[in-house]
Length: 542
Image (cartoon, rainbow, N blue to C red; front, side, top):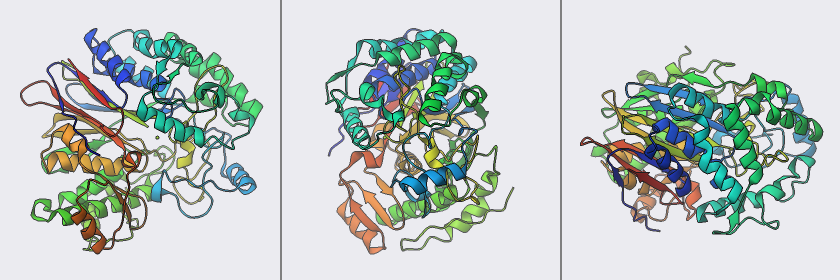
């Protein structure tokens, strides 16, 4: 497939995301005098209505904000219920068997795994609190004004976009066979006559409109301590869930300092664990010590894949809730450790294993405004429609982020009460000599860190604009030596990788390779933006 889209050049501000109506909501806020955070929030809130298979009110959020002087990070991910234990999960898994899950790629070890659907993988939704906390620190327009488009689409309905319809159909197919009382509301809210809506079909969700209105008017208090919280508590109690009103009331976002590595005169920033952004940083730090320009295209691609595999091996071994388990992030990002990992790369495909450092279906959006503020924000319920548990009368699904936990009791990311799991969604940001270049992200579970590596390399190494960098044919490492590549990748490179021991599969499945956006600050003023051509992506500016 061809990706003919051109980059957007905008003098005053820009919004880029995976659904045009959500991008338009953010642009409308910029044009009304809102800043980049206001625009990001309007976009994110609207995405819960216009792209519900990928994100919803019951999901999580992470963000990086450049305020004009420095970066701020927000971890708005939720924790597991206080009543959830490993023993409860194991007992349930023994009764019904483990579910096959591909989303984490090599993250899950052999043996029993967390269930993907139902109450067991449900964690406290962090997105509503994240919206409030970002607005409280940086917002300029009234909070309620940022919900206007989302509530309007939910009440009056909208035609479903083509890319969203494909994900929707995948999610509805995954609902087949789910018969517990906790799943009873799903069909009423998310199907039309029992089926996923076709592209262009009109769909509305008036229950979600009411929920969003209560979140807006209460600044999310109703969600965590009011009527919505009480409804969640009651629904869980009725249908065998573990989430309680106390779990919701205890929830809080965490402001964090982003972490970085240098890459060829630039700095690449991610949020610290419990997110997997450190996998991208580990890979880029390995690659920073390699003269890629002196290598053949085949060798460059081989090095990128092998460095990414090593980054993932360490992330899967060490990433956990840093408030509950020590995560050796500083040691992992030590240049000496990167050099030791770099020495493991040979001219043949390897099987990645974790090192020993010294101890010490998601949506993405980015925005920028005329004052220089920029936002990188990612939001998700994880797999399509998350847990498939829908709160009756409220129109939203709960995430299944607990799927990121391990059942190995000795692993730092072992399932347990009141813990944040290993999280796949990661916002990125690029600077050069301390000055902002801009926000970027590539959604798609296990694809995300490797998408970040490929986007940064296409930008820094190849000098491509954001759209051209996003349109570069991608590869996706799943596990072992298996690498999926897009059909557009040079057949000579495919043959060369196979000669190096990579088990290359040419896959014409756009979703496997993630969907991304980026906005770079233009040296001559204004911004240049790109948005995903593999889905209904859009970038708008003014």
